Length: 72
Image (tube, rainbow, N blue to C red; front, top):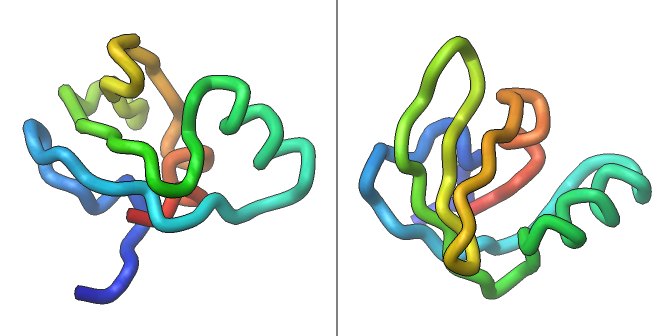
């Protein structure tokens, strides 16, 4: 299956992070939250354009623009 942005992942589905796009500071910020290639991420829900995701046993809310840079 072709890589897709995290924004297209279904709720409750666990996906493997393939790569992180965007500017260097964006990548570093996402990596600091635990979004690294090879990591597992699960979309919990979507509200008001933000995604609530589960990564490394933490729940994190990220904006659609950020989620669009995370390829799964």
